[in-house]
Length: 452
Image 1 (cartoon, rainbow, N blue to C red):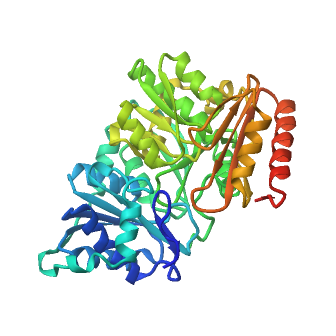
Image 2: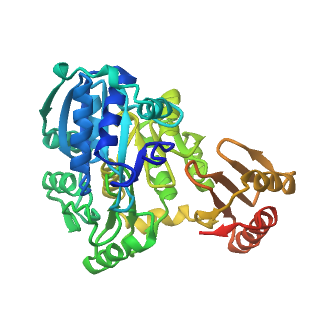
């Protein structure tokens, strides 16, 4: 089985770490853990997803659950199904943006509240590893049905489209699950001209890995935007819970700047609303929210933490540097196609090029995320705190050091011996100087450090 239980979900290589037998056990344990008998399940297009879904379904039915199978869908549609159908729980067979050999499960309670390392997954892992579900088998009580939600879900998404002006939109679905939903959506709005790329679901990912955060995956999209003289380009990951954007000049847009842009739309409709941003985001995000009269709130990295904080603070919107964007209007869940709709609404309203809307937000310089393999994390964090003793600092998620003209956050990976550095400064000279300084301190504290 291996170490397949992660901080936010279950994932591993198929079939070496995650196979049908383990999927059955996860299904049976899922029913035992939540004692929920009404489950909805979806899957992505990976070559192993059908087999893993069937095994999971059998495990849940063998434990007395009633399963509704909504077929090959996006993860946001699975969230919608849980909430709209008032299911006790839901499961999505997917490995999101990861390579084809990897697969996994995203598991939710009622109202699409996720199971995570802080809420449910450790208990589920215990049930699986100790086979504690076996005495819960009750095959005669279980049932199975199929349900097609595409039309109803697209109608729901369509209700958020406002005054669509003529726009040329290049969409790269990455051979993931967004293709069918995007195509159905655009058919409802003829003023939007869809220029499709890699829309057919294909678990082999024949063109590129479906991960818009990797710059090499959007090269084709950037070229196509320029060739077609499009207004915007959109790239989706494998299960369409995150996305990236290209402006009309073919330039990638940092995901935190998208957070600031969408915040303007929400604050125009919800004056004074709370908006969350993950602590790796540019300072311009909180500055923009405050300038527009909103209440900016920093949050930890990771969808489980963000969704929990959104509910507590009744936040209308949240943005994460990884390209996840979260909305109160869809049950405090992340939804990439919904994000595309908000961007197209904003372009229709403003009627100016996307690059001009983004340019004022590019006031700082950042390193992007720098990943380092390291063994002794504690000594690194201790050394940095000591060296920057006069800084403003906090430990909301890892270590954040702040000065007037620059700041950085250093976080540990939840799943591997890796630390992740994000740094921002007022200008390139300060950024280069402080980046070298921080990396030197890390290297001195842990000589085995290796940049990834």
